[in-house]
Amino acid sequence: MSFDLSVWALADGATPDDVRAAVQRCRQGQHLDRHPDPRVVRFYRAITSAYPDRHPGPNTPWAVAPLHTANDHIELNLHPTCEDQVLLDIERLAGENGLMLYDAQDGSVYPPPARMPG
Image 1 (cartoon, rainbow, N blue to C red):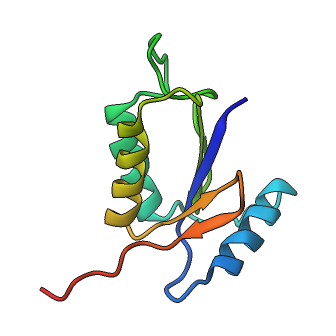
Image 2 (tube, rainbow, N blue to C red; image 1 turned 180 degrees about the horizontal axis):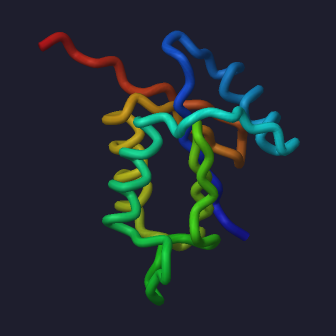
């Protein structure tokens, strides 16, 4: 069994219910036909530079590789025994890229942290 998360690039102002609706559409095979969101591309490049999903080594955190990528989200299926640092990196990179994080275990949605005024 894996621990499943996904990161979502939705429009500004999207709610947790919007994320859950997008997850349902994905599960039904309904994906928007558009160019990949740059936030998703940046997240993917960053997370896979730290934890490769193509030809992963024996200590990979990924239970499923390569990662499922779409234009507005990435699914991350993790080994339940993966190091906590992997989860911290996923949370950090999601926040840095303005992505909402969906926890498939209980349906929780974590919006990106509010940006502090500079």
